[in-house]
Image (tube, rainbow, N blue to C red; front, top):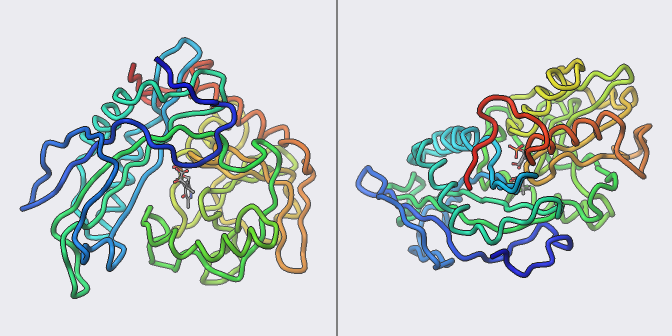
Length: 340
Ligand code: PLP
Ligand code: COI
């Protein structure tokens, strides 16, 4: 039976659910993994994650569809990206097929927390892993723990679909040849000061520039960015230092194949923003959140789509992507994993 939760008023915050998955890596191999009701993690005081931030994570969602199935969106892509993150951080790779299997197990064990169709909420899944044994010299752990928990969530940005304002911060997110392209916890730790500062100044998010030249648009702290040109081409920044968003890659496909639009992944210079008519943030948590204004110090870019509603193309992309996720539209082969 569905839990008695006011689904429509959920924001993006943690709510403890009944079961989570845990598997440990020791002596060169992963154990079988179990579901547990214990939400606490007990590790040594000198664990690799605590001393040297050896940790990476993923984020994906389970949806209840129009015909009352429970599905996940492209979990194989998260499995692959987590393997890439683990390799970059010298961690053991959790096998990709077992990742998908663990996602299925956690969703099935917490089915009562999958929000009803049409409620505006979804079940967010957070796979993560960390170095769990003691290290004190700077070196990788040799034991790791992989876990997945689930938590029901609503919109990432307060106010739901109202356009937000971004600012260009004086901080950088990712160094050339650093870890910006993987989902390392350290990328988020170093963004915390910048996001608190942005919020204190009334902005919803930071729009980071490339740290080598500070002339090109990268992404925000928790989402990739898309722009729409005046002739309806969807443009997204190409960079080796941003996270390869699964939502963004899916949207570019949707733009071309479902909406018949041109979609370009290319370098985007900050001074091109004045030529765009729409902007939005895309990601699992953000879905597709419209941006109305971007402030770069003494320059303010007001997107013609305004501060009241999504731009027309952004809205079409949103409707099509969420239509695929919620079963209202046919999905491309392999995008939807039916769980229950
Ligand atoms: N960029 C960053 C920095 C993120 O944290 C996320 C969230 O996962 C994304 C982009 C969006 O990626 P995805 O669409 O795979 O969720
Ligand atoms: C996600 O979209 O899943 C993320 O991990 C982004 C984070 C800011 C919540």
